[in-house]
Image (cartoon, rainbow, N blue to C red; front, side, top):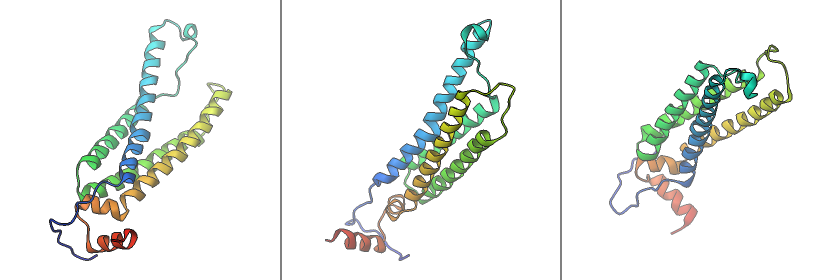
Length: 183
């Protein structure tokens, strides 16, 4: 890479649309969706336990463990903190930490979801069409998590994102802009 000293005449790089989109998608997939599910299951559990018999309500909330909820909350807080840092702070280290953090979270969430989906089934609760539908939906959600993770890491590694977080264009960046857009 060519060393470059920015001058006052050169424009400061703006946030690329793809970087903003990647950050917002990560917030939606890793924060909004899990927290909505956590709130739903917590509210459902409270409603069910307030009624004397679960059979009266017609709802039985099984399979939601406290450690799983705690992990979902911890991942959501971690992603939210990284996303806020990536949105507001222009630093090369923020870009690198965000890329690595999203890659780690994406791989971890994918493995966790696949383990819970493809793992051994418990036949104590019985088998119904809803459990099979849930398995199919989780496979679709795994694909979405993989695509969003790949998109976020890819966007953070592009030259425009590097220039944005660096705060200035290098000579190579300016040559690329000149070659693509002309003068």
